[in-house]
Length: 139
Ligand SMILES: NC(=O)c1ccc[n+]([C@@H]2O[C@H](COP(=O)([O-])OP(=O)(O)OC[C@H]3O[C@@H](n4cnc5c(N)ncnc54)[C@H](OP(=O)(O)O)[C@@H]3O)[C@@H](O)[C@H]2O)c1
Image (tube, rainbow, N blue to C red; front, side, top):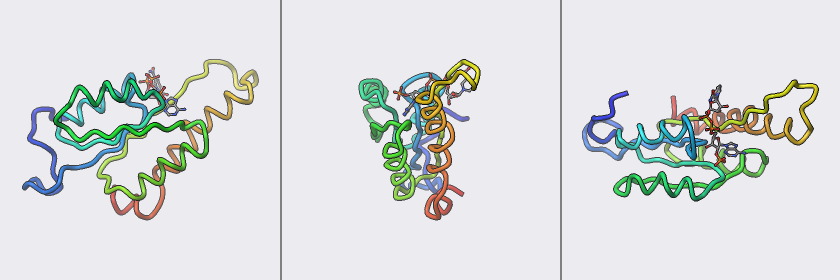
């Protein structure tokens, strides 16, 4: 990825900047991905539960349009709210990065952790990436 390029635009000729939604940018890989995209000039919607971490990331790029959205992907309501955003915003890129790891055998996984795992790693990526509008925007 080119991190020194001029701000990303739809047509490379001064149209509105590209817009990316990234889940899980409050730490790890997602945070670095968000930084790379911000340096490329993308407008960002950054989604996670920890508001302070999202605010800190946005503060690193005071001149960029970075919109924090607080959502919990372990709940259906949280996933649905972000899926609505994906369907309604003119996204050019979706980075489906949020994840949890429960390191234990499946048979020992408590029901609440199994539910969290399925919501964050299966239901959320599926719902965020589907929908006619989404396919039109990010094809
Ligand atoms: N690191 C590895 O070795 C490894 C290996 C294989 C796959 N992966 C996958 O790669 C991705 C990034 O890994 P990483 O190590 O960078 O992860 P990480 O540092 O643990 O970050 C996980 C991100 O997901 C978000 N997240 C977790 N649960 C969430 C929830 N219920 N609702 C909304 N957001 C939630 C966290 O934000 P909040 O806590 O602020 O909500 C955080 O920003 C993950 O999907 C991970 O499963 C990682």
